[in-house]
Length: 40
Image 1 (cartoon, one colour):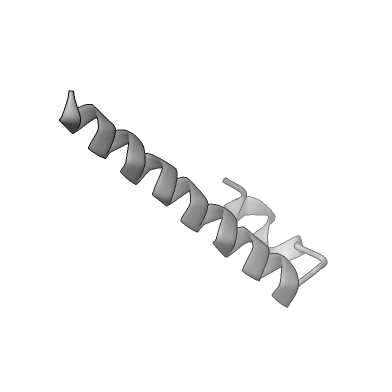
Image 2: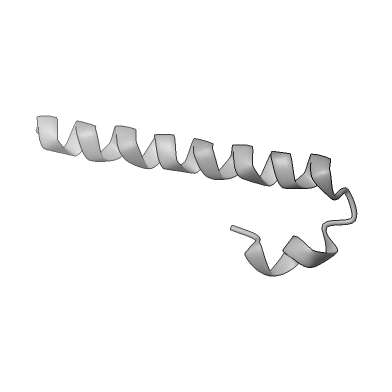
């Protein structure tokens, strides 16, 4: 049971990291043209 909690927590953390990366990319390049293929 606790193993499942750890997996869920790390998954949420990873998703959060990805969204932060996308936000940084958007700030750096609002056109998003060269990052379209990296869309998660």
